[in-house]
Image 1 (cartoon, rainbow, N blue to C red):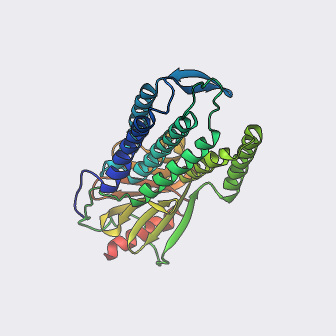
Image 2 (cartoon, one colour):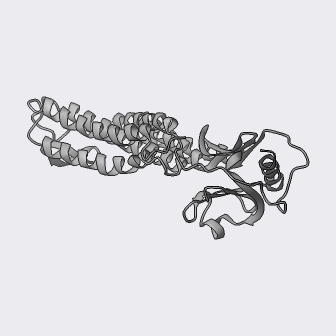
Image 3 (spheres, rainbow, N blue to C red):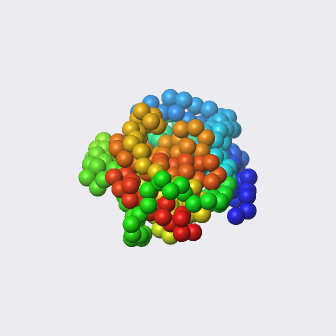
Length: 318
């Protein structure tokens, strides 16, 4: 695979989109300046506006926030050699922020067109939900288009004979990792209850559009899928690749006992030092895999012995 410094999809979605969103707010103010009051409402306390700015000052302030905050997060997606799952997660978070601010800004401007007094202008609550949903959807699309351009190096020898081997190969091996169905059901129930309560209190539907992306992002950090086949070792999240290593890159797989918090400082997808990654979702056995490019991956699973043996056997057959 050709080595790249920047991921083209990451540049488009992580850099160009936030800049375009910031520019959209500036263009809107320029086009509507003759219809906007000299001071527009920009901040609310409850339902009453309590902060005011000139349209140009507000537009430039939000443009800077969009580029620095939303763009700062999503720009990491452009770095081709960064950890793919991290680039995807940061892109979704960053563009959610960009979408929220952009749609809310345009809705606030539109609501104040042709007004002379803005003391009683209400914040357009629907824009919070629509902006979050639009930003997250664009981020999810961009995340699905990102590719892994990390360095790939083939191993030049089979795994040491001291490492476990599998008596038989029953492929593919597919294992869910992380939160189980019961935990996810509880999570979604709590999220749905919070969304329903917020909808009732606000007498609007828009909180659902905020809680839905938040629930999906949370699941992406709590639920993974491990796949071992003749092609290699794969870990997926939200149906997208988190880690993809070919059999030719693996130098060996062993079994070790892992405590996520003491060994990696926490639960879930972790990084401890350069090239040392973990999907640590439970305390107990884990398969520890090393690669010819120097990277290491630890995956906690009750089936660690069989997975390590299968990987070593496949590597020996390559």
